[in-house]
Length: 558
Image 1: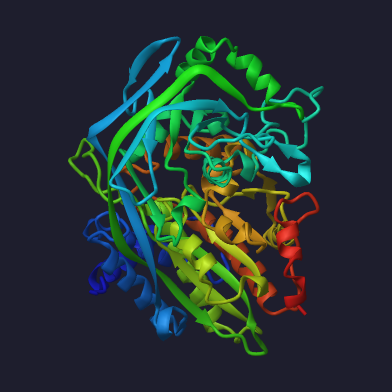
Image 2: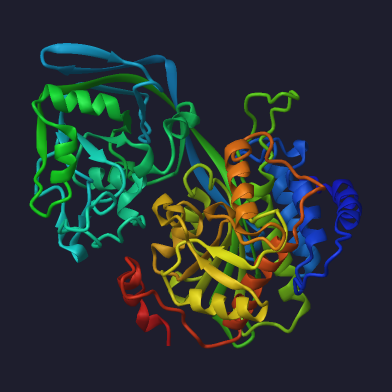
């Protein structure tokens, strides 16, 4: 693996000149210039968009490892090395060998992939063939015993396809509805995520699961659903059938409305019924679904990078900082002919933040607890690198005191606040607020909890297994910028999301003002540093869905 030393030297020179700022902003040990230098290397076209298993992986890993080595860290990967092998499977639906149709009211209608439906499989089979499978509406597809909620009511789904609504039963609830507030109101829960719905359908024995797409509930449009072009990824599993139905995917809302109508049902009325405790699954009478599509599955070996600073007095306890190194590889050319989706902000800055925090820890006294640095693969393919670590941890999750994750950090300059994703989840939020006050800044709660961003980043892989977490994600909402206020912050978020998110133009820029990013990263460093030098165990809030999971391992934290 060749380290991009020349590119780094050039980036350091350019970045140093780029940060001759008129106002001095205290960013602690975190350097905006070094952040810029790291991102410039990671976003370089030579790394081909950093696709897992792609031509840029080796160079990406080499650079990250070189920086950990230079800082004086120790490896924490497989067999005493710097990396953890992550076996993945890439599934590709052959668009030339697909046929989908629905039969309803005695008539059969052919369906167009990407236009009417988006369907795939994550079972290692060469072909999926489903003929006239009955369709059963199971509401939101949620089983939540702690909320006394069960959408399935013991229905037999063998050989059938579950049709489910996106989000959770509380998302569109009226204040007078019995379910109002039971799932956090507009704030999304894990039960609202498409990953959960597929897994729960598999646990209930369904042949397939189709989610009805609605933009508000999904928090993204149909274009995001079809962006994969038939590709999906998963970690290698001993029994994929336990978590994946044979057929899984999305259908357009208009198609669902028509199917319900043909079955003598009103879609909107059924949605209202699905928000009641008495809801029972209903078969769409006379409606069946047929599918015939070829799948190519290919095993890919990708890698996480893991480094550590061993604790001096309690090395078995740990604090983790993490980000993902992967981006979307190459895609359609932009107006300049560039095909590389550089992934500079998403998540080159996050990786740069991990490196800067590692350098800061390495320069100071050794921490009492071990400090772990994880740089994950395949986040963009479904949080797979962090998921693999969570099921094959190098440091026990029960004694991981906290996880601090960076996934897109703002590039628009210093701000009066930090917008915190998933606020109200655990006690680390209070620690962040105290650290922000020392910077004469504040913490702004997640302004768009309905977007479910808390469930869409790598920290979630350990959060759902009980580890308290903090997530910085600049896309959560516009910060209150020193120059331009909240309006300017929202403009930055909207411009980035609309024009560059997952696109070619997400590239390094000398015009970035990374002083605000450095302040935000310094907050994580300060809180993590205090945690690594304490006996404190952060806790989940009483209403968190992860509190019980953490409590189950309490005996291991003495």
